Structures are given as structure tokens and as C-alpha cells.
Length: 174
Image 1 (cartoon, rainbow, N blue to C red):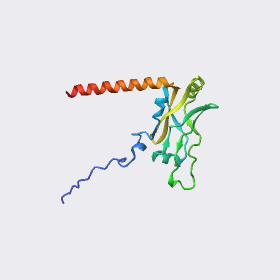
Image 2 (cartoon, rainbow, N blue to C red):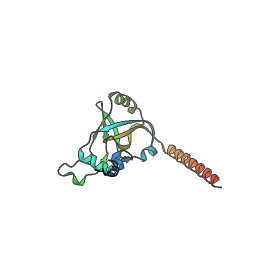
Image 3 (cartoon, one colour):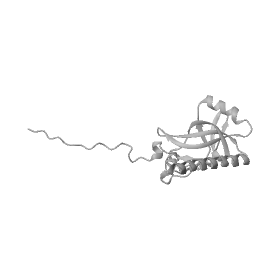
Image 4 (tube, rainbow, N blue to C red):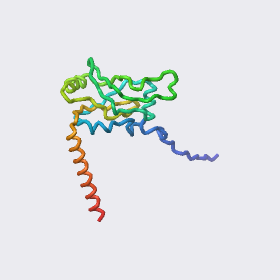
């Protein structure tokens, strides 16, 4: 009796069809304007309290951080004006798009932020939203508002650096 060996195909990776946002490879939402309007000093990672339909909307890319800001109230951290669009298949449990959402951070981090946000010109600005181990995380930055001349100076510096890189690239080609 001869044994017949069968050749089996290697199993595809378990997450082959998963979304890069859900896998944590790409940000779910970014606030690009934050770097333009604020000088970002410190960054902290926070969890966020969400409903199920909000998580599915974030996975679908319907989150907007542009007008959002953080606030410390009664020893708790809150995120205001974060817009999360509605999820079509939510059934009866729809959520309000711009409701105030609670952020989850350690008590000592919140205590540090209380003192720093009370200084003049300082604000808590969400810079990005992403998934880590299946949970939605928000990166908050402590930012100082830029004046118009600061914005112009930053733009000049970026332009000069870009032109220098292009000149180096051109010299390498020749």
C-alpha cells in the first residue's frame, strides 16, 4: 500500500483582505492644519469613548479632526467638535456627528495638562486618529497658537529646505 502525499497550498495571511486603517497601518484621520496654526510642543496618546456606529464610521474614513479641540473639565479630558459622519447600516442606534466625547488618559497626564492648558495661548489640539490593537486612539498635542509672522517664517523655511533638496537631487543627476 503506497502512501500518496498531497501538496497543500500555504494558507493566506489572516488579515489579507483587512483595511489598512483597521490594521493600524494608516491613520484614520489627520489634522494637517494643526501644524500650520499651532506650534506643537508635547504629544500624548488617548483612548476615546465611542459608540459602535462611530467606530465603523471611522473605519470607513468619515472622521474630521479639523475643528476639534481638547478640554480639561472637572479632572476629565473631553474632545469637542470632532465630526464623525453617520454610518448607513447603523439601524436604530444613530449617533450625533459632533457630540462631546470623553478621552481616556492617565490621571498624572491629565494633571500635567491642567497646568499647561491654563497658560495663555496654549490649547489641546488633536493631530491624528488611528487604530491600535483594534481600539481607536487619538493623538493630542499641546500647542501654542502661531502669529501670522510665525506662519510666514515657517513657510519660508520649508520652501528653502525644499529648494535645497531639489538642488542636491539635480546635482546628483548630472
